[in-house]
Amino acid sequence: MLCFLGLLIDWAGVGALFVLMGFLVVREGRVMRRQLQEEVSLGTVSGDQYRRASSILGQMSARWTALTQGSWKRTSRFYDLLGELAFKKDQLAHLGPEREPEAALAIERLRAQIVVLARRSA
Image 1 (tube, rainbow, N blue to C red):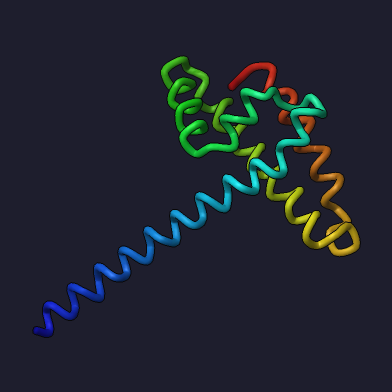
Image 2 (cartoon, helix red, strand yellow):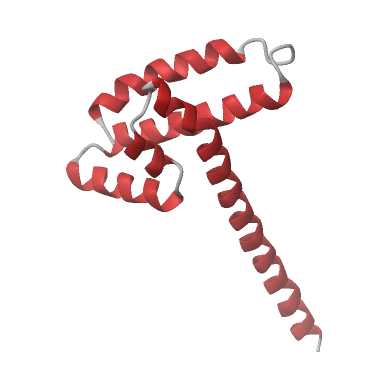
């Protein structure tokens, strides 16, 4: 009986971990869609790059394709920077420029790096 209880507790922990991971993946997708939409109109990324960045499956597909074409490092960096940009913009939106005075400069730096990589990847 004690072994069964231990097994049940172990699997409950594993299940909770998967639920948490699912929640975080959904949250990341929402932040990416909301915060990167403006980047399409600014010309930082294309509509296709935006769609891939906003989806975990899209990013995985783009990274896999890049791996087979020899541009995995550059493509991974591109999507990592898009994630940083989205979450920095989200942070600025929630905290405001008074509490995040360096955020606007960081956002501009990220955009500049993304524009350079966008020409060569994804």
